[in-house]
Image 1: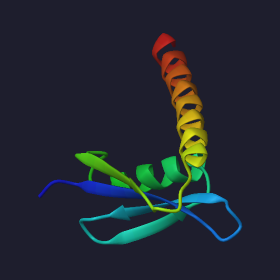
Image 2: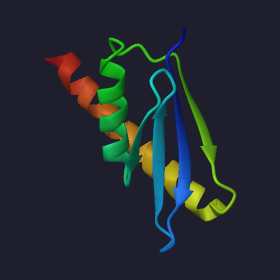
Image 3: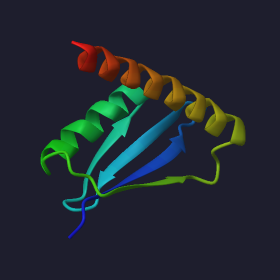
Length: 93
């Protein structure tokens, strides 16, 4: 069976976004209030499978506004740039 995680973007009553991460193999969930926390939880959950995650399925609730999605995409892009810079530093050592 493949290791599939689900990431559902939601908005709380105050309008702040968060991501509910679900490991579909054992139904563990984690509520992540930012991308640093999300990345750490994906890493933690993935460690149980030797880091081998087959797929991450993304979804969002109907009440998540397009500007919220844009904000998350921009933050994810910045986060990925930081990860890439760290990898480059490690590889150059």
